[in-house]
Length: 304
Ligand code: SAM
Figure (cartoon, rainbow, N blue to C red):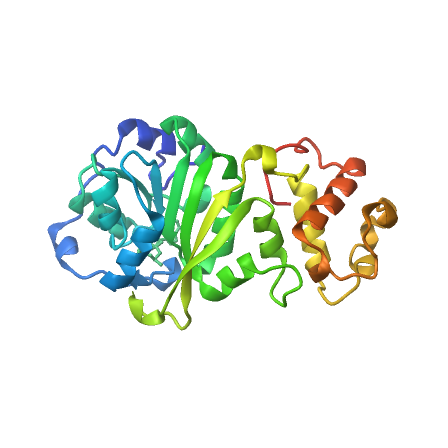
């Protein structure tokens, strides 16, 4: 189980159900928070944009929702109006303290923790439900967060996350487009993805330099997932796109002894950007038949 800075685990936090963990000094609560760059803090402040995001999420009473990076509660507060209770993962201890001051433990269970160390499988088990994940993600670690969540996709009902628009465009890019790449293939193999809305820099304080976008990610049902070995799949996709302009016979030369190109119906002269997600899965499964990764052949761990 992962541990937070205060050495409490997620399960501890769940079982204590948000028990009081101390209050910030009064002065801290009254002083405006100064955004911390190292935590990717760009706070939403536009009420119209916030309302549209919450409408896209469509929170319902009884949902088991987990917000990543609640910050100053721009989304948390309107979400709570529908939900009644929410789990929130926040690494910044000053912000966590302010949230504790502002919301009761019956409303908000705060996990003062690095999201990359959160065991979402354990959280889902402890709560006895699939999780709905939401968050305006810290852009400096958005890809690691996406891959961390991918490992727990089987216990997640859906995800609505805000990222740089350019990253969302790469996630949903179709085969053959210039921006179709590792992120597109890895995520499209596990989720249906939909870009919901574009958010301009002026909706945040401080304003980022680029547009942002909300993406809806719904994990495929386990029986629809075709990847046999996520470790092999991740390695093949990463290797194929390591030099996207090169032909597969060159980029995948390390696997040449085990690939039967003809049986797969793939030309070794093709480039990675020309292979559909389904073809990548067939290729990786074919390689995994001969080169299975040790002990994880049927698991959901997606990273090499
Ligand atoms: N949800 C707020 C909003 O929309 O205004 C804040 C969003 S801000 C872009 C990202 C939030 O994620 C901040 O509150 C930041 O402190 C938190 N954060 C950054 N890195 C984190 C990490 N590794 N684990 C958990 N929270 C993190």
